[in-house]
Image (cartoon, one colour):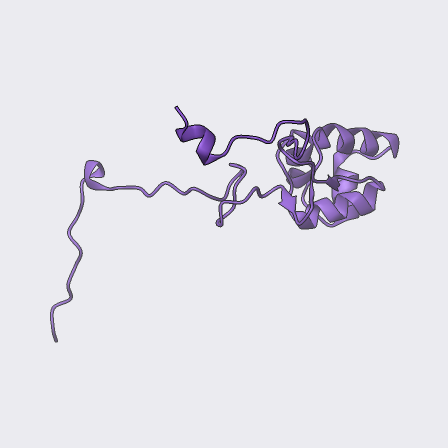
Length: 129
């Protein structure tokens, strides 16, 4: 029989941990895009308050809502505390509570195209001086 090769034992100071730039609740996915946007829709601000108010209006406690959605109570608690739920959970919440959590994406910046009487700056104007 041959001898098996064993990886050398490393000290904790020698172990380099890779920092993930995606996943969790950081706001960006693997491709660097906002995980709370889907196409031209995004998770509305204040979603946790909307969920809580709709659940209370229906007279359900967290356990009952979780049972109705076939989810764990931890999922409901996380969403109501402000942690963004997954797409599947969002759909279930919208169906179970008859609410809308995904709204139209609004542009992040305002641009004024073709406004005013100025012709704008070109390279000739830049090198004039």
